Image (cartoon, rainbow, N blue to C red; front, side, top):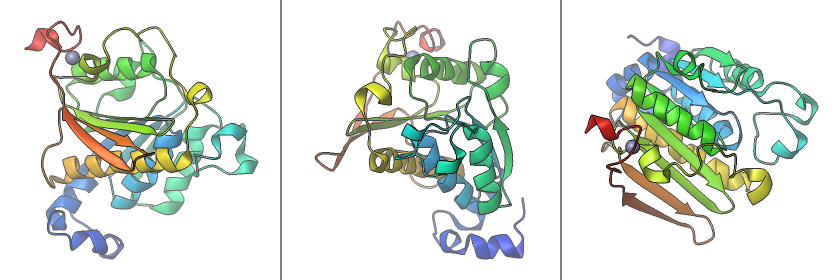
Length: 249
Ligand SMILES: [Zn+2]
């Protein structure tokens, strides 16, 4: 997939990175990423991926902008309260980088729709804020054979992991939360600086995976403690009884 002169100039500061180069940039242009959730994490992920020249971005979010979102979701303006986030985020990207092909989806990922919404992508990046959606996205990613980057932030803690088959996100969190929207920012609180940090880190992993730069981060959980200013990385074992990925072992 060739790059135009304008693209070569636009991406020149990352093209000079030996780990990216022309080949990595062409891989990014050929890539299709599905961003689930255009909230705090998504508002960091979307500009980072669009800026880097990901060829196709699907942005899935069924919510409208609320006044209480604005402190951590800088893609939206005060006058846009009540407007759909997926459409606004897509509008931002169109102005930001016209080389990105966009598909905004003003829906939630729900059972019965997940396969159709998530299929056809090279990578799914989940930044949603509830376990039910995250588990559904994870199970669907395994079923479709698509790698999943999962990013979450609450209070001063963040976690990011790339899951590629087994182990999976469900091995990590178990099944206790399947039916429950128990972890959301309304109850726990969160800072925009934290969602930005975690979202940008997730975007960095996405770019590495898609461009083929650095080690494969699959199966490692990256934990960020914002009060200590420290990242920790742990390797997660597969759950032999995991109902999503267990039968594949
Ligand atoms: Zn699993």
